[in-house]
Amino acid sequence: MKNKYFLITLFCITLSLVSCSNDDSTEPQSKNEMLTDKSWMVQSKIVTPSISLGGMEISDITMLDEEEVKSYIYKFSSDGTLVVKNSSEQIILETSWGFNSDKTQLTLSDPLIFNYPVVGEIGLSTITLNSLTTTKMVGTIPSIYDGVNYVVTITFV
Image (tube, rainbow, N blue to C red; front, side, top):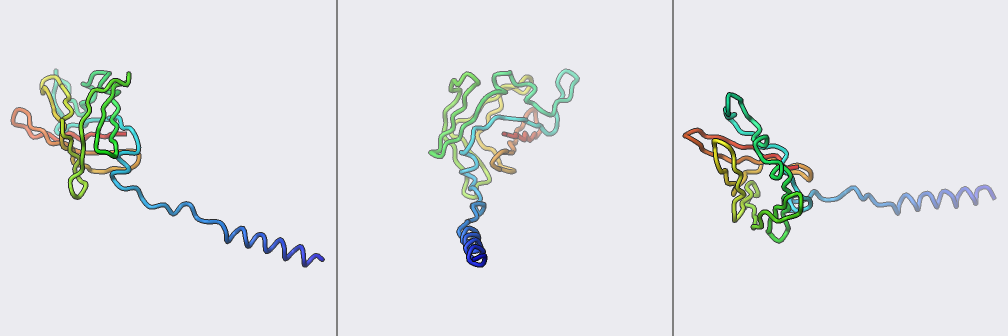
């Protein structure tokens, strides 16, 4: 009688182990999926070389952004649209976006315009992607001002 219960228990355990599947074997997300699965905010805009403003060396130009600009939300949609909203959910910009063929550059049909003291307006229409994960996007934008070549590295989270 003990053997019967033991065999039934062993059979049930074996059956439950065999019927379990591994749900962790998901395929990695594509760059399109990573870009469109969340809303993004700018964490930093590091400029190289740094700029001198009023005797102060500035390397992260987000400190020059207005508070409203710091809270902009960027939502890339899978249909190729980008909507930028402020913290009050008002649309600041609606444009289209796309990747180049090897998905190393992100291009906007209408540029994002940032206005800075001394430098003036910086238009962002093409960003070269350094990295893109599900939680962070880092890209670079070249810019020339007063004969100096600058590179702005933007980090979105």
